[in-house]
Image (cartoon, rainbow, N blue to C red; front, side, top):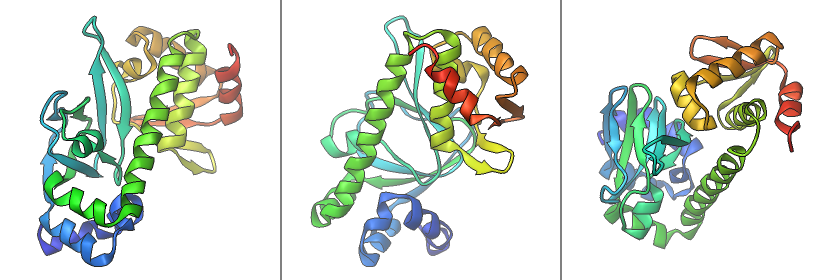
Length: 234
């Protein structure tokens, strides 16, 4: 990656990614050897079972990690936001990708090859610890997705929105703002519901004054009430 790109991305990566825990010289070396790639909305960045030869960091845009059930239904596992690494599992164990990564909007991705990354992590265990922590957070995030499939639709949507608010939200005077470059179908795949049911439940929440929708932005206007609905069937 060239000097101009490094200068542009340096603040984001230093503040929000595991790369920021590395010594300056090591950080600069990985930045120089890394490749910056652009993807259009809908691009498949990698597929499940592709070779895991790199770890990636999203530097702009938004993407989703997905898998498919035995019935060929998409299961949306995680939304990736700028500064967040993905593809770590395959990069660390050298095996195939465990999920699909798909661009939800135009994206920029920093690609760091495993052959460059692993010696660095071995030499700097604190950075390795950051990668492990990120993997643990993602593993913990998947468990509620499975638990939610047993809940009534209203509670399922409420719990899902609370998770997204904690991950993606920015707190402002009028509520918690989330930018989600997703379709109702994507939300359904995340909540484990059909698109029509998502529309119905989101409509109920809007009329109750719990959320507001402004284009691609969902604003949680009554976080307390949303939490009550999330706990209603537990």
